[in-house]
Length: 390
Image (tube, rainbow, N blue to C red):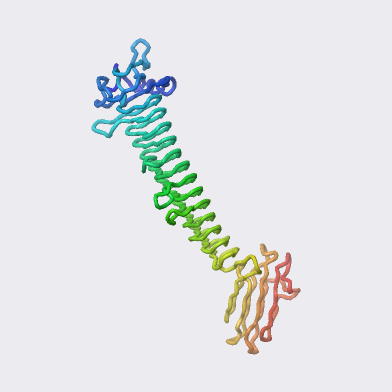
């Protein structure tokens, strides 16, 4: 068994853990070592190769509780390599992995097979692996994926830091990695299941949200990806917000909205499935409507030779009525105050293009407006109670 004296009940076990967490604090140059008392592999007669003075819990029959008993170097039981001013809680199961260890000073290690590699760290969780100046919490959380990680916070099962420092990674399987070509990355935040950051001064929040750098050693700073599978690739100073939003290999771009894509420098796309097609462009709405700045305005232009019902994301419409009279139908005015449409008849036939307001709604007092001549056009603006012609 792992302690002097025999714990006899579950209540005694609980009492021991309580005493350990509440009052069993190491003094200067001391170590607390506590073990899974189901383990036959850590008998009190085991001596560590490199022990530190400290305490072991001892069961006191008179007081019916565990009490700390001071030990001297060369006596009692500590783990091999346990550092001074450290606290170790945990052990191994029958034929299980190695015990918890604090290899360097001023560390706290809690959990079977948990370890810390350098100074001033806190490591909690089964098989968790801490590093210098770091906090690592979660089963199989790994702050030791390489020899260059430090000053990180990892929380979550299988959370991993590889060649990073000053980084926060929270969530199951979250991953913070090197900035490319062996360059250590720093000051990142990754939050969410499978969230991934590879760069500097970047933030990825959401399931599978990712910041990815493939530049060989080039600086890659200040990207933000928020939302499920939001993604910035080699995009310095860019922002992707929304499910599957994507900024692709450009600097200082913004993509906001589901499946929004910004792939041009100094561009922004705002709206579901909106996509940039030029540098210095702002896309508003969906893929059909966009505004370019600076230097004027670009709008969607739709051509039809059939009857057509105008949608809110459409703006300019050309109608070819060569095959017969055509009707352009307007949606109800509700919710469209200020909506602008431009409609033009482009053919030379005698057929007409009729613009039809919804139900009893009117266009400058009439329920319809008819275009009869080639290149005749009309601009409509939605008012509070009718469409206005300009």
